Length: 96
Image 1 (tube, rainbow, N blue to C red):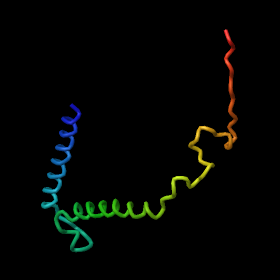
Image 2 (cartoon, one colour):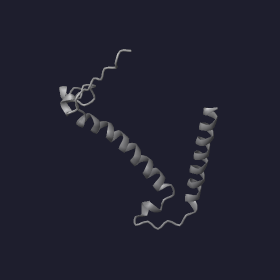
Image 3 (tube, helix red, strand yellow):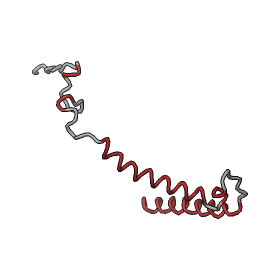
Image 4 (tube, helix red, strand yellow):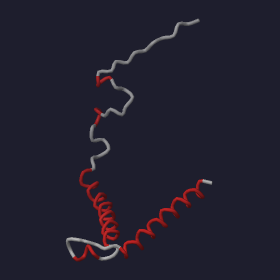
């Protein structure tokens, strides 16, 4: 059932994209540059820019990525948070 709904959504989005792409041939473009008046310019430009952003992010990730143990023993994802000021309180249940 889930794939049926996903296929309908993808088909609907594809149809919308196709209609908008076809409508772009009848628009009267008023661009600052001649290339902006070409049909489908903004669709192609947007796709190329988005793809370039994804590939650039993969390169930038390698530049700014830190090692897994970058914070050492000061990491806050451990269960023992006594270094952050949180005291462990152990409450004992009375024996019945």
